[in-house]
Image (cartoon, rainbow, N blue to C red; front, top):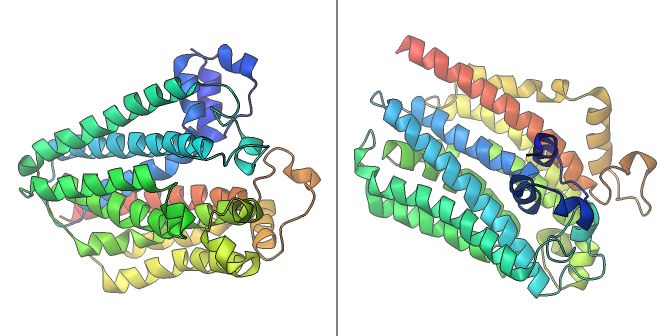
Length: 352
């Protein structure tokens, strides 16, 4: 077992050769193939759902409820991993990743790079999807045992919606400018609002509203990615929003979404105090936790056009440019968001 590679694959998408791949253990291969570095955003959404459930006015949330949170986290994590595998398979079959396309430049595309056969990718999808489905099935079958006896059919509908997004995000949703909206709906209302329901058995629009700041954080990442490969997508007739809106307007929208990540928690303290206390203002310190160079770089990147040539300082992550900056911000923001929610939950438990 290569623990060093496990850690690396959880932090970045490693660039590896076929020879290096052949020497990896199964877990390392799975982490690389599923682009595990980005799955942290899904775990963050799952944790937010659990913490909202803990402070959502359901005093009967108990140890069993935390097992439900674990199932939600497992289900969402492996569903996202399955989605990444399906994405690569779909793009490969449609010829999107041929001829050094953007995807194959920043990390190995398992099929295009010859690391996996189509049969092996199907096996990965089947195994990964089965784990996600098993977690979802357990949640459905035990829904009436949740703190507020819920309706298993609602959980089933939520799970079905997740399956639709997993299978059809790459095509046709991304092709018709619905990819960014899909990410917003999935990482916010579906993962957090739906996860809240699966844990507690009660639907809460307040929990859905509470999901919006972090949902926007995930959208900045996918927006950044689509700005980066706007020209390549246009040539491949993949009509993402940055393709339709252009780079400048898309960069502006990312900055607006980043600003909203700080504005919405302040407003939420007044409009949904059940889920947001003054402790959530901790998210406002996120920019201060970024290194000075990171703060300056992120602001510079989104206020300037993408470089034509690779900057010397971007050697490690090029052609990732806007997405790299957005991901750095989202990773720190998500960590602070979770910390604030943990502190808020502890305080809520003490008071009640």
